[in-house]
Length: 101
Image 1 (cartoon, rainbow, N blue to C red):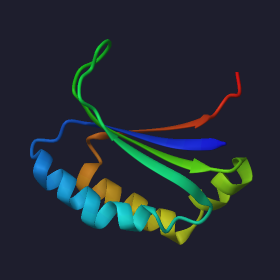
Image 2 (cartoon, rainbow, N blue to C red; image 1 turned 180 degrees about the vertical axis):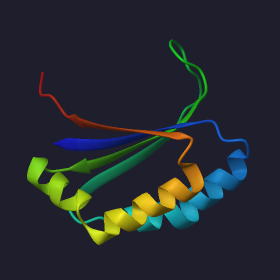
Image 3 (tube, rainbow, N blue to C red; image 1 turned 120 degrees about the vertical axis):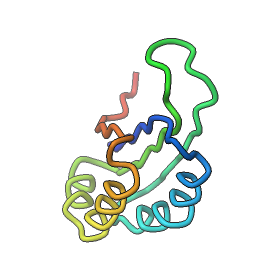
Image 4 (tube, rainbow, N blue to C red; image 1 turned 180 degrees about the horizontal axis):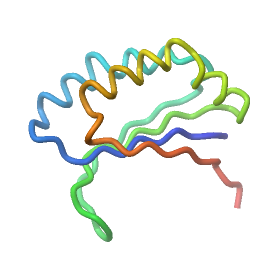
């Protein structure tokens, strides 16, 4: 499984951020083809490392081919455009492979 991870730092207006995230961004992101699971975690505390993390979103794709196709889709382009508009300075995007260890 391949994951696209989005780590958001704390916004100035958390309530406005969450309203946009819930009502606008998530509905767009959930249309990305090949998405098999998504999960959003609101960070309650940073126990070690850099403070200031607010939200972690995980978008799961079956395999590398599904991930690559999804990233080239118009739905992903729309999600990316929205992301940059409301959280471009707050987000770190990462890609990873789930290991069976």
